Amino acid sequence: MNSEPRKQPAQGYALGSRGWRIGSLFGIDICLDPSLLIIFVLIVYLLGTGVFPTWHPDWDNSTGWLVAVAAAVLFFVSLLAHEMAHALMSRRFGMEVRRITLFLFGGVAEMEDEPREPRAEFLVAIVGPATSLVLGLVFSSIALFMAGPGFADLLAEDSDAALASLSPLASLLLWLGPVNTILGIFNLVPAFPLDGGGVLRAAIWWYTGDLHKATRLGSEAGRLFGWVIIILGVAQIVSVMLFQGLWLVLIGWFLTNAASASYRMLILRDLLEGVSARDMMRTPFESVPAQMRVVDFVENHLMQSSQLLWPVLEEEQLIGLVTLDEVRKIPAGDREVTTVGAVMRNDLAALTLAPGTEAKLVLERLGVSAAPLAVVEGSRVLGLLSAADAAKWMALHQA
Image 1 (cartoon, rainbow, N blue to C red):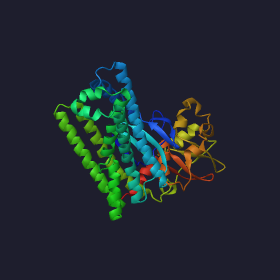
Image 2 (cartoon, rainbow, N blue to C red; image 1 turned 90 degrees about the vertical axis):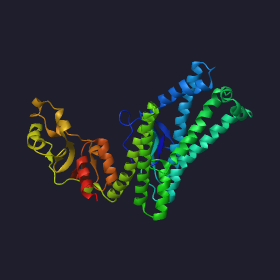
Image 3 (cartoon, one colour; image 1 turned 180 degrees about the horizontal axis):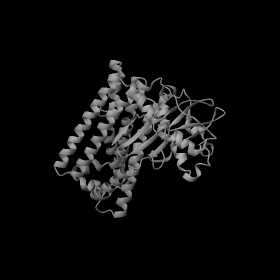
Image 4 (cartoon, one colour; image 1 turned 60 degrees about the horizontal axis):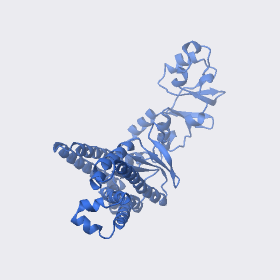
């Protein structure tokens, strides 16, 4: 399971797009990605059909399945604690966290910015695995306390009898403790996007003073580690361990891609530093009067231009915006008697932005709306900006 503390801002989390918001904690939204259901079902199945029946052959089916479900839920609560530790430490250094999302490969605390110094990078990265290790120690200690003073000796002499003597709660905790310990140790591997990659980057950044070099080396380590995992997975598949092998290949693929993305995001952040909507917008552009018939708009503007959004003006003042989507809603026979002003969108706040809007926020807005935006100052339109315009600007300015 992966746990990644740093991500660039993501768009609003809504059912059907990126997951479900189930609530908030410390002012941070908690979201569940639909892919989480896969690993939840898998954990419950493996515990309910393998681990607990082996430990407790005398348990009835309902007991085994109930403990399996409880263990899976508590595991994800532990994962949430891991991510919350990242989030709260990030806040300590002035980096706001929008949401925590649990998904197939673990969790992610989505930060609005990256750490600005090696010390912050180190502490934000290390606190997650430290939390998992502490939880592992606490859960294991409680399980052993509940098992009684003679449990360790009995476990050495007859492990089956020792495990069978555990209560349902002690069994759950004895599974949950080592799993958290493994999660903490795995995340300390010095490779992006694991937390250990953040620790490695902090160390290289502190030693060299070069964030780019530190990120590049951490990403390269992540890709190398990902390929090692993939090779191990392929070896297991060849050894007829199909499920375990496929799972390792999937994890390795995720790690290699996420490691590459870490470096690309840093390059993008630096590229957009100090850039605003004014720098990326398209000029010149066409505008249309509110009194124009829709049929004339279609013939003279919509079909004759690559422009995607038209400002609608009345006495040189912006009163609305019109796109192909609005025109499509009007039957062809009604377009001769319908004006642009009658079909335009007048929710200007959703389709406009200020010229000084930071490029990072521009990309977020474009990602959310999927429609072009008008760059407006007062009631005057300065330019238009679409996702294609932004992509073109970035392509032209990349080194």
